[in-house]
Length: 370
Image (tube, rainbow, N blue to C red; front, side, top):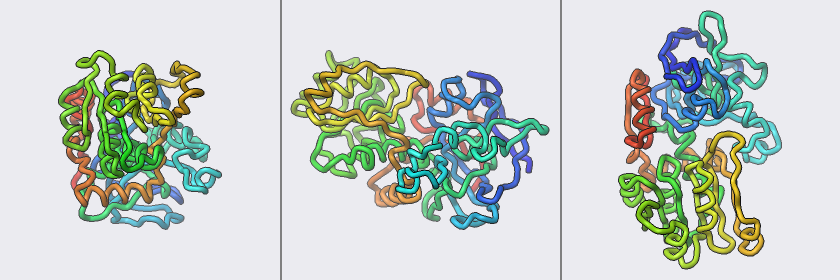
């Protein structure tokens, strides 16, 4: 079928909306008419050449829409179902079999390969020439996407469908970092570095699990104000204090029990680590370019028992965790719609510009009506 898709043709180039050809779904694939798609920092990281796949490529990995058709071996969804799309995984490796699907042995190939894992083919082409796609098993910067049985999550009728997309990556990453990866405990202290989608989701999750002290650290005062509205008990702008680490340690009685570093900046990761109390843990969902290294004082591990915990997709099992987040949203306990702004599909470059200059935290592109 013919679709409209936003294509990156060159590194650091614009997203150009073009008419392309999308294949029919194969046996375990799902054709989804996209209603809305969140824009994530990872999309821009790939655009800029810091992660694969290479141009030409169709990105987008926070899609939501309506199932139009399914392959003959798909049992989880059927045509007409409302679904959110998330990351892909093989479902068969040892980690997947025990529920740790975010650490699938083929996670990188499944989500950043630019082609189907099974045979290196692409479901999208331009006049017969393959376009890199299958990004996070979806490539949802398009009017339609081929997804997989593993990465489609049914969504209840009482949630605005276009709002569901960010649950598939940024929101579940931040919330999961707190609720799954770190298992933050009631009455504990949590400091979150960076108050974008991931950081704000972590702050809301901190409130859900009953953290006593929730400190938000960011350079933008407007974002810190929103963090306070969403559950932060204290905010810190590094430009307004002499020493971020000492400020956090003093406010938490000699160090935070948990930290989330969502910026992907190595100097900030060092601050997050140094802000911890003894036996504290920092979760790291923030992803800098491949090959980036960080310097830490080894004796700080030895003498304090602190830990650094990598976080992929919030250690989420999406088929269970995304419905949990939807339930919390409907209860009024997880109002992630507070940091969302909507844009029409053709305004994708404006949406990205607003995200990069800090005007918008989570842009969502609207492709069609639900």
